[in-house]
Image (cartoon, rainbow, N blue to C red; front, side, top):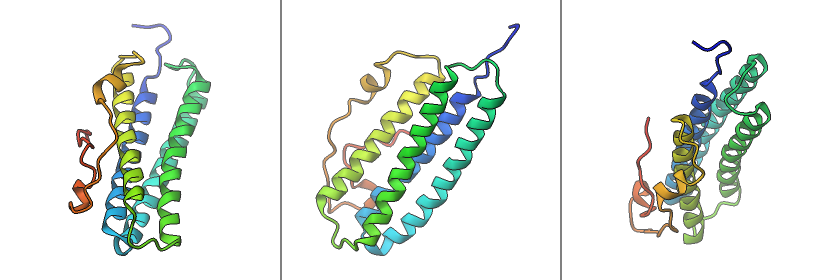
Length: 171
């Protein structure tokens, strides 16, 4: 029994944020691949996910203000959670800009960028899973993903548009 136990719940909050980011990235790819007709629905769903991510961020700040000993420096926890929130805000902003500019048909370069965002989200998830498990090696996520630039298959259904994206997320 520890005299002053550390609150490890922050890692669970980070994982919640990353899970929401990955879901938003999946919707971004599917919406962009399906075209403007389905992009509005994806934008609405991404907005809902972004609001959930804001709630998680609020929970982190509330817990941070009430926790004496944290697993990481409080400033690092605040910075990490804030930057993760910036990622999902960027995804939401991107989908709204694609809608505003009525891009039709969607260029392959846009689809490729969406796939890169999706791949980066998978790397984020692996990194935060390793952090939560106590494996704090800086190379863990990059070694386990073998990330390469995704190839775009524009003839594929939206769920398989990014051929290099591995769907190994939990949850």
